[in-house]
Amino acid sequence: DVFHASLSVGDSTVPPETPALQIFEQGAVQITGDFPSVRVAAGDLVLLPQGVRHRISADEPTQWITGTIVYDTTSAADRLLAALPPVIVLRLSADDPREWLDVSSRLLLQEVRDPLPGGAVMVSRIIDLLFVQTLRSWSRSPEATPGWLTAAMDEYLGRVIAALHRHPERDWTVGSMA
Figure (spheres, one colour):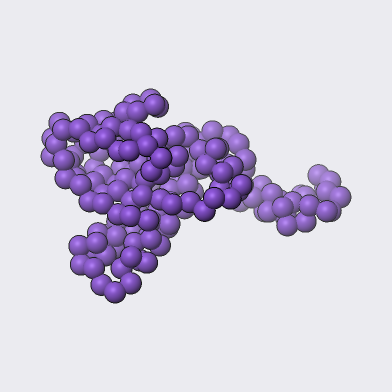
């Protein structure tokens, strides 16, 4: 995992095949690419899980932090990534303050601005935490497309799916899954 802090006015192009998580701290930007354009502002988080090429355009001083993500190459990870949209946006909301995002962002910035021994491990784990929390929040949002990811993260269906995977040899019935 690699971490970057950016302060920009104008355009910034992010290379393809670099899965990234971006947290916008100041200003507003337009993000364009091979997906519907999105406008994001301070407090918003953007996850680009498949690493699609995108451009960030800002008309005002804008500050954001970017963490790149390296996935284990497994069939489970491939299925997860295939189920995700190219861009996931979590918007800052008074109804959902996302304390985890504020705390994680502050820790991430502290580790980068004042590196201490073990800082690279901390940054990597914080990015992992942000990735999982982002997927959790997104899966509960109206933007999440129904599918196995949404089902797997559901409180009840998730338990059933996990049991099916742990014991595929069982002769499962609807009654035994209830």
